[in-house]
Every structure is written in structure tokens, then in C-alpha cells.
Image (cartoon, rainbow, N blue to C red; front, side):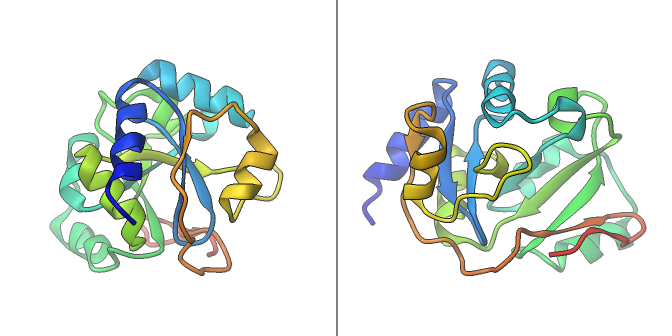
Length: 185
């Protein structure tokens, strides 16, 4: 794949748009996590309740760091040892993190992706992306660009086409401090 589709996706993100892109298991819907209007639009499109919170997907820990509160070094090292990978961690959020991102929680769901196209997208964007499954809440998630089009028609600003990573289920979610599995992968 040439870089042109990624550059186009980044342009859409920077202009407050919503994109769809492949991740490890399903297509994700994404936007700029610092753009409140884009997050609000994404939540409405997905019919997702804001109190649930969203996931931030990144190419590296450094992209997530501005959103995360300090935690014990041992805990941090345990989390970082699983990335890049298919585990999303609930990490204590900085107080400045929007409620639209963290929901009714003191934590923020974060993952460093192992999907090469998603990682390249984050690197080109130079930061993390909101990442939530490409579906209407409580419906099956899209696994192909065609399925994204069937669900959302022209309501998404850009679809970055590519193969998902082949995982059967969305990422496992664990609590960073306790290690407890919140959602099995």
C-alpha cells in the first residue's frame, strides 16, 4: 500500500472527521482524541453512551503518555511488556482527560497496537486515535471495508482499507493496577 491512503486518513482526522480502519480483529472507528466535536459525532454515529468511555489506540507508549497518570513502575513495566499486542489496559487517566474519552471512570482504556497499518496511521498522525469497533452499539462489528460501508453508508468521512489482523475476538481488557480481566479477548 502506498502512503497516499494513510495521508488522506490523517488529513480527515486533522479536519475533525471520522475514519474507519482495520485493527487486530475488527474494523475500528476513529477520530482525534483531542477534538470534542469529532468524539461527540463518533458517539452519536455509533449510538454509544458516553459514560462507557472509549479506547485510545497508539503506535507506542509515548503517544499515550500525555493522557495517563503516573502509576507504580512495576505496574507500568507489566503493562508495557504486553505491547504491542492485543491487550487493552484500563490505566488511571490524568485529571485533564475528557469525560468523553474516559466515560464515568477514573481510568482510560489504552492499547499499543500490533496491527502494522493501524500503527503506521498513528505514527503518521503523530498521536493516538480514538478506537471503537465499527458497528452500531450492541451489533456485530465490521471485519471488512465492505461491511463498514453496509453499516454506515456515507456517514463516515474516510475508510482506510486493509486486512484485519486475523484475531477472532476484540482485544482483551484488563485493569492495569489489579491485572484483573474485565473483558476476555
